[in-house]
Length: 417
Image (cartoon, rainbow, N blue to C red):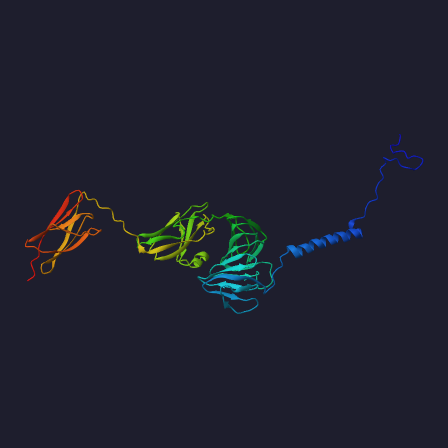
């Protein structure tokens, strides 16, 4: 059988079309030049990340935030110290500081990174996650905190979970007395990693409740914030005594809104932080609520919707209106002169020969006493002094524009002795 291998010329030279097998290259890890090249490339990537991308973790004691609002009694324990001091507006805050709000108190904290916290009553927050170094921006130890993240991804720690909020995310974290933690996202996106290793991703108007052992429940949809309708912002309503309603609040219905929660206060900070509202009415089934007995002054109000599971969505923006100290003017209907009326209240001698005649008639009428005209006020009343005559009685007449009249006669009181 003939061989299929190509014949090699006796000269020992290969034809031009012949394929010469290449000698295999050694692995890159055995080539010193390849190792140096890959090392330089990796070093360049690490250097770029370290100097231009990485945001260094703040060190304990480094200033990272300040108070932008303090309402009621708020206390601060500085990093690595065991003393508490009362918080003051514009106080600087540092990594490791602890902030505590008491009953009917709250605070707003502005971070250098652009994030903000609204710390409600009876809450404890650590900056930096804890008193020690941490990669978290803050730690919610107890209570309720509303947050708004700036232009960087932010890590938030609570006892049984870690929340990683994406840029420009708004939401709230509620650590209950039972140890359970509720995480809500009103706008943006956040990943919730529980102690049990579960990861729940929340989007706009979504929430999850994690129990004290770190077990996550089902993700739930939150109702959006209602749009307020009336009274319009900066409106002035007249005062009305009970049982009349001074004002009626109204708002638009929202998806998943089973009931509504109205909060109202004299103080805009109280209304924003929901600390101790003058009026706090949950469980409203309608999209309106009548207010009775409001004193004159300015009122700030907002509304949140609650779903069937009892989870409350984001509150609306705060609106305000004023109650005028003067009551609403009573509309006086224009009188009809087709049927004139006349009431003679009294005829009294106030001086020798002088009579005081009082009464009411249809506004616009012509009123006379014994034929002499008297002045009729705009409200239909008249009060006139006339001289008495020798007659034993006087006659008062009210005549309408079409000529009809009403008339009353009254005996003249005896002359004074």
